[in-house]
Length: 270
Image (cartoon, rainbow, N blue to C red; front, side, top):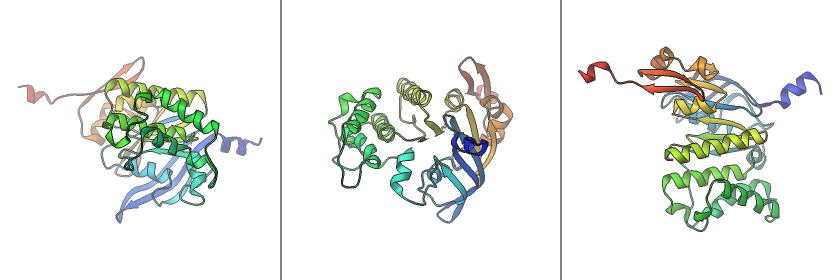
């Protein structure tokens, strides 16, 4: 394999000069991003910085300018089924059909792998069963998804994404509705699946500590532009967090990774 082909094979995501708009308003500006296969990249930044829009561009849900390539497909151009086999998105606000059980919702993740007039195979059922077991969803399988709590539903939607067996997994605030125990369970599960195979993870995360502990690399967005890109220790500094978020924080180096702690203004204690 030539050096160029080998480099291409080891690259899961390429964005060059990517821009995107929503409602006639420019949201992303000239975004460059290259992600190697098997990496975990955490997208961080204030509300409205463009994290969700970038994920939607990578999933082919939002039109964009510039060059985008994800797992050998060009999202939004070409067959939707081919994109869905390569890329899975766990949205922050999932739309769940009425009358669909948890098991049926997870099984929908296998749709891209089933021929148009084909039927589910034994392997499809095995993949779904394994995802349900690993996410500890067995007690909910026959319940309607719309009857679940926010945290329970979040795990089910992740299950649907994992059942797709994507090459690139896009997570939009994957633990926002979860208690601390299930946050750890979900993030550890995704990380174990990443290290076991060649799954590439790009996750938009508000929790900077979790973003730093699970991400090999952080990409900090502000007003639709990449303002920092690198290891957590380089991206998460007191000065930079203050500039971008307008927040007072303490940054600690822990064995598991960098931790960011908010601080109260001293005058409020006076």
